[in-house]
Image (cartoon, rainbow, N blue to C red; front, side):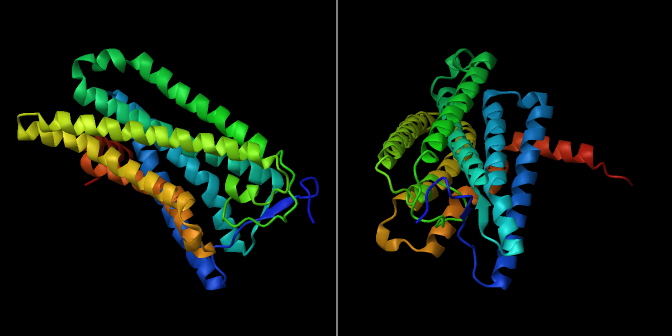
Length: 311
C-alpha cells in the first residue's frame, strides 16, 4: 500500500525488454529528436530572419514550431536516458514537471492548429477583410491568448492531478507521465474532479475539431469557385499541409485515448503514444516545407548563408 506522501518516484513503462532493443529505441529516438530539432529550428530561424515571411500564416507556423520543440523536448530526453541506462524511474517532481509541460505544449499545438485553420479560412473566404481581422496586433493577441490559456489549463490539471492521494503503487503504464496513468493510481473519489476536467478537455478538443471541419468545408467550397486552375492550385497548396498536420495529430491522439479496451496492450499503447507525441514534431516541418515554395526558398537562403559554398 502506497500513499502520495510516501511516493518519491514513479516507474515508467520500458520501451523494450531486451538490451539490444533498448539501444535500438535509443537510436531511433535520437534520430527523430534530431530531425525535429533541425526541422523546427530551421523554420523558426527562416521565419524570424526572413522579413518577407512576416505574415500571419508564418507567424503562427513559428509558434507551432516552438510548441513542437517543447513537446518533443519534454518526453524524449527522459525516454532516451532510460533506454540507454536501462532504468525506468522518474522523480515525483520530475513527473509533475513532465506532465505540466507535455499538457502545455500539446494543448498549445491544438489551439495553434485551430488558429491556423482560421487564418486559412479568412485568407480564402474573406480576403478583403484579411488585413483587418488578422493584423499584426491581432495576431500577437491571438497567439498570446492561446499560450496563456494553455498555461492556466496545464497548471490546473497538474495541480489537481498531483493533489490526489495515490495508493495503487507507483508504476505507470506509459513511457512518460500523463494524466490518465496517474489517475489509475488514485484511491480516492476525489479523482472525479479530474475526470470532470478531462471531460471538459474532450469538449474543447471536439469544439476545435468541429471548427476545423466547418472551416475547411467553407474553404473547399470557396476554392472550387475560383475560375483559374492556377488559383485553385495555389489555394490548395496553402491548405493541404495544414490539413495533413491536423489529421496526423488528431487521428493518432484520439485513437490512442478512445480506442476500445479490447485493443489495449502495453506495446500498442506505447506505439500509439509515440505516434502522437514524438512523430508529429518531426514530420510537421517536412510537411510544411514540401508544399510551401516561400518557406523552402527561405530555408535554402538561410542554409546557404550559414554554410556558404567555396570554390
